[in-house]
Image (cartoon, rainbow, N blue to C red; front, side, top):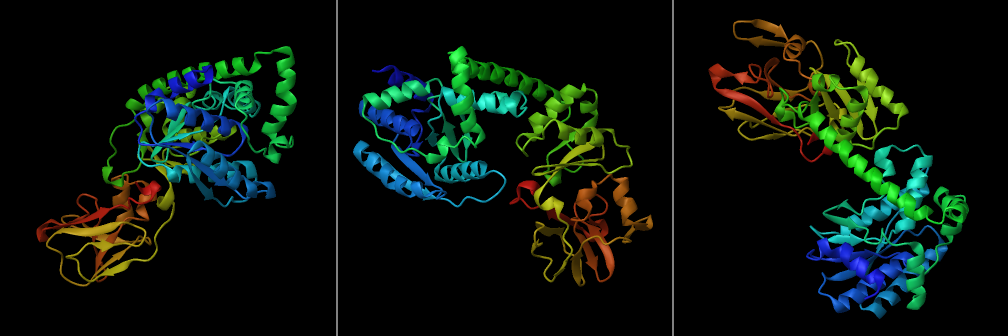
Length: 438
């Protein structure tokens, strides 16, 4: 067995019981070699079912011939092929938009536990590290591409990261493989191509082991990031106490434990917490965290990020995104309170116990609402919400139950959520189909 085959089989060992393997097959050199290697292994070893996926972006005329080339190559190897067509959204970076569209299409093909195999190699890893270093990335960015990560319902695996481009070229020549050349790969106006064709060759002239050493540095940085993640998890433990409003199902942290940490550990803990919620901010944008952290107690500070915002309320940090950033303005009559009421864009409302009599209607706060409480008389709703420190972003979405013109219940809030003497309570299930509300 050749060195490449042997190393590939070793890299694939943890995933040999997966339900299926898919090769992301562009038709270029790298993915052609990977597909040929896997098809060769499949004839010698017991492996999961193997097939290929070609994503057609339609961004250049030459690409129209690539699906047919891929079909021919797959037919020769006895591997089934699926061709997926995608539309690439315009924007500042066409390269990034094409990559996002490609991975979205590939992710949609994966079932639970299935593995997508891509052909990035050691030289790609070195270029990634250098590219991100020049853009000022931190440790997380400089650790490069992981060998595996979650993608959709399955796993993305890069089994050739320890192999060089030269090894793949030699294998392709030895086996007479045919592949397509993407004209855009020669366009040095693109940053990564400039690194590949202009910078890396000059580095290799003086340091022949440049690619190997840069890839090794990426591994060292990956280990450093793992240690930072472990420290972040320890620092977050004390901050992950339950909030006073667990029914919100919104990610939040207690602020005080974070304030006891150094500024560097605060940022490290927050990066670890935010990485699953939003693209992380660059160094300059972290000033927003300091403004949020240092604001006075009577302020309502907000730190806006890519996929939402961080708000401070009631001694906690709240991640607010999706529907929580919108305030419903139109209520609804409740003709049959014995049945749950679906609120447009705002979850489900129901009455536990015997529903109150009279014409009922659900409204939202407009300001100036009064509510009658036993032994306390009529009280201003704003003051009542302040007393229980309900976060401001919840208040505009909080369902209010009216009987005629009288406010008789505020969903989910003890004492305010019903009439004990009448034996009922108003319960609100927040939406769960929106990432920001789940």
